Image: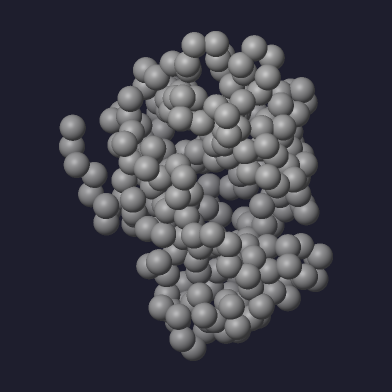
Amino acid sequence: MTRMDHTTVLAAYDRQIRRNLDTVGPDGPGVLIERAGGVVRRVGAAHDWNGVLWSGLDETTADEAIAAQVRHFTARGLEFEWKAYTHDLPADLPGRLLAAGFAPEPAETLMVAAVDELPLDAPPPEGVRLLPVTDAEGVRLMVDVHEQAFGTDGSALGRQILDQLTTAPESVAAVVALAGDTPVSSARLEFQPGTDFAGLWGGGTVAQWRGRGVYRSLIAYRARLAQARGVRYLQVDASDQSRPILGRLGFTELAKTTPYVYRP
């Protein structure tokens, strides 16, 4: 097993997924990837993820670029997120976002693994089956899990996933774990054609089923799908809860990222 070169992989991630995603094309229906004023941003409907993916700023340009993005999104009535990474410049970017009215959410860890180095044979525990999500009923089950696992409203997420499944099914693979007929965990895999990466998103398990191997089985399930599509790396923005599990599976920490949210 070869050791991952952190610097090389992080540079590839920044280049392919953050800085040059506009050359790949939109990653969802009705979504625009735009380059403007030193930033790359994703703009969609209110239920989509809207925000700044990358910025190439310095001390002399940061404040005006931040103000310009606030004007752009608020003119459309959209809440948006500025994903700030520990290696982004200027070094005081987080403080400038706070001063502009952004609110930080819990920091996450950018973790990456080479697909060919992941354990792909991790079946769900006894009594649990994995169901591919392909329609509105499957999305309803995912939303149910999301709301139980994270304690937040999942309606916007449900609309986003259903949009993808309906108009761009090749861009996403979603799965729900069922204990009998009860949804207990769910997750999705988002593809970025033309890049080396696919993203693991939304992995959540209801409290009473945690620690039994369900989450691990969803990682393996999605890794097999990624391998079949020729994906080189899997990427995840890991919470403190999932980071130790991912580390044991072979994911490597590359950076910290903090979502700074602006609500009009």
